[in-house]
Image (cartoon, rainbow, N blue to C red):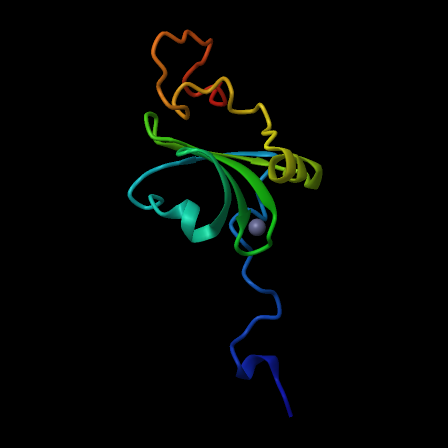
Length: 121
Ligand SMILES: [Zn+2]
């Protein structure tokens, strides 16, 4: 006779990192989460050293991820399969992070209307 209590295993696997996230997720970058991105996600493509296309290691869902090393935050935005195709086939990235101050290489003489912590408002 088999009894579910004898293995100690639950029928439901543990939820992945992103299962409960909404369309957008902001996460603090701290000592507990310094390796969060690589622990929970696979980097699929890199736009800048701080902006990536990633996939959840648990469920495989694609996310547009940014690491703000000035304000110490991660940003994630859910991607559709069409958006993933645009990135992988045509190098066309979503514009979500274009206004972010701290996820782009510094370019001299450039004056963009980029702001810090735009999702925090
Ligand atoms: Zn997931």
